[in-house]
Image (cartoon, rainbow, N blue to C red; front, side, top):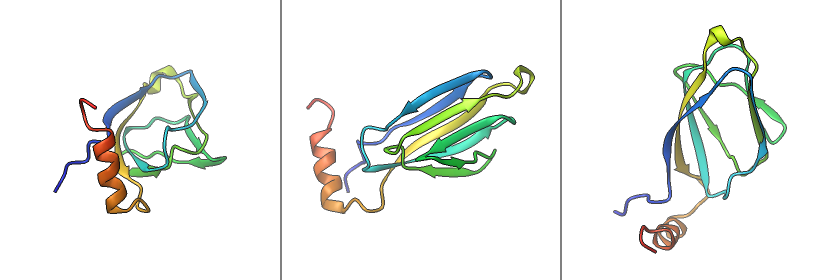
Length: 109
């Protein structure tokens, strides 16, 4: 069994007053799992024109290859929005395709 070398994991912190312009993820071979750790009022994620809801303690799956924007218009007293992000394989990517992508993007290539 080979490891998924094509994924990432990170914490994302969005300070109050922050508005991130629309962007696209680099590929549709992944789905991003957002685990809400701290989600104060006024935080918004819009993916492909559809508003999504972060909630503390819950996961939200996002295909970030669609245009997406993020904002935190809450008060400074509410503090930052904090989520943990883990990249997962998109369920429509077959095993052979995963192996090929692991090979192509292996460290040192």
